[in-house]
Every structure is written in C-alpha cells, then in structure tokens.
Image (cartoon, rainbow over all chains, first blue to last red; front, side, top):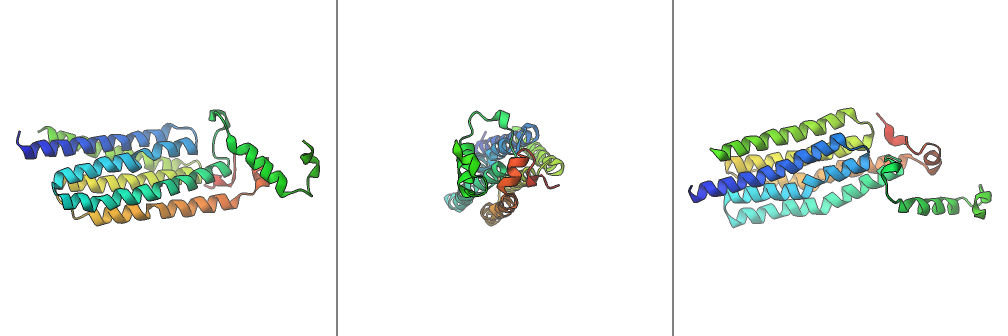
Length: 130
Length: 104
C-alpha cells in the first residue's frame, strides 16, 4: 500500500469510530428509561465522535491549515455542549422527568425542600416545626 | 478495497443513528426527550458533513461545521428554559412523575 492509501484507511477507521459512538448514542436514546439517562447517552458523540470525524477530515486533507480551520468546530462544541446539557438536566429534574428508583443519591431534594419551606413562612408554618 | 467497505459501514451506522434519533423524536414521550433526540440528530448531521468531506477529499464544508457547532445550542436552551419556567413547586409536589414537561 502507498502512503496515500494508508492515510485514507486511517481516516476511514477514525470515521468508523465516530460513527460507532453515534450509533451507540442512538441505541442509548432508544433503550434508556428516562430523560436524564438518555441525555447521558446522547452526549457521547457530541465531543469524542466529533473529534474522531475531524481527525478523519484532517487526515484526508493532509494539510496543517485544514487542521487549524477545524479547531474552531471542536472549540465551539466544547463551549456549547455543557450549557445545553446543564439546561436539559435542570429542566429534566424540575419537571420530574426522571425515575427516582434509578438514582443512588438525590442531593438536590433536601435543598429544594428547605428552600421551598423558607419561601412560604406564613402559609404553612406548621411544617416548619421539624 | 477495504477503505470503501469501511466508508460504507460508516454511512450505514450514521444513517442508523439518525433513524434511532428520529424514532425518539416521534415517540417522545416528553418534550425533553424530543429535544435531546433532535440535539443528537444535529450532532449526527455534523458528523455526516465531516464524513462526506473525508470521503470526497475536499474541505469546502468546514464553515458549515463551525456554524452548526456554534448554534446547535440555541434550540435546546430555549426549549429547556421554556419547559422549566412552566412548572411551579405546588404542581411538582402534587404529581412528581408527570410534570408539565409531558406536552405532546
């Protein structure tokens, strides 16, 4: 095999790894029970799968300037993916869109209980005697 | 040629991932599940654009990938914000498992 063919094969293998992560996320989206665990599955190809595909593009183009042009893609994705995951997780918890029995520990529950009790001191003061 | 076989497998796997995300968008059951699935479908779209560039040996689609990676967040954040603004602690206490996120 020539060097070109070997580089093409390496690019194809990197693409295959990215596609495998993507289909794993799809299966997780299909099989997992609640919104929070589905979110866990769906975020796998967002960073690592994207990095594999960008490696494949750089290997196929074989130039440093292309690699430099690809860096903003992964940079923007790394900046924005945690924000959307945070918003989805927050909304998922607040709307009760998760299964209690799959949680090992729920640290937010006691905090929210205390905050909502302190919010309404006059209406239900009987509950504050604990 | 083994490279062509690998590229074919990549195409099949990415199509399968997009179809699974589409299935979750259609089935729901909640609005958040649909947003997660559409986010995942957009990620698959970015991967497909990149895979097409690697297959055809050109770099014309890189600006599209940059823009998609930068603005993929907007729809998710807007909808997630809207969902969590709808509910109040009283409703949450009464029916913890079925909140207003169950719009369908």
